[in-house]
Image 1 (cartoon, rainbow, N blue to C red):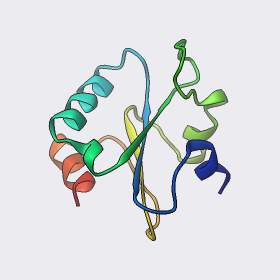
Image 2: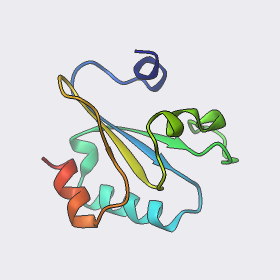
Image 3: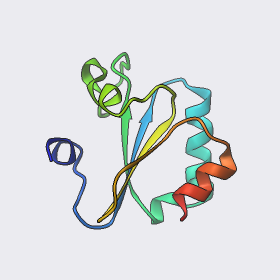
Image 4: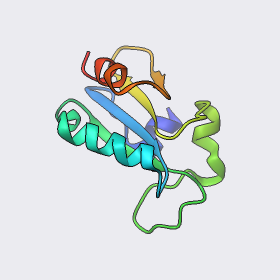
Length: 104
């Protein structure tokens, strides 16, 4: 409940929590995939940046607490929250697999 409130995840609908880092080429590629395939039409997207990020106006994972809780070992990684379903973590997968998971 604390994590849902902190991230603003609603009890209804779908939320995609996107663990990313500034300057990450794989994250930039994931941004392109998300944009090209209009993933934002299916999910409310919440980006969380690593604790070493020095950017204003973004959600920063202080002390890498959330990435530790969800065992994020690869950037980008995604936490998929669908109403009434257990959450799902997606780390390093092919573009095709990522899209298959996100668009199911």
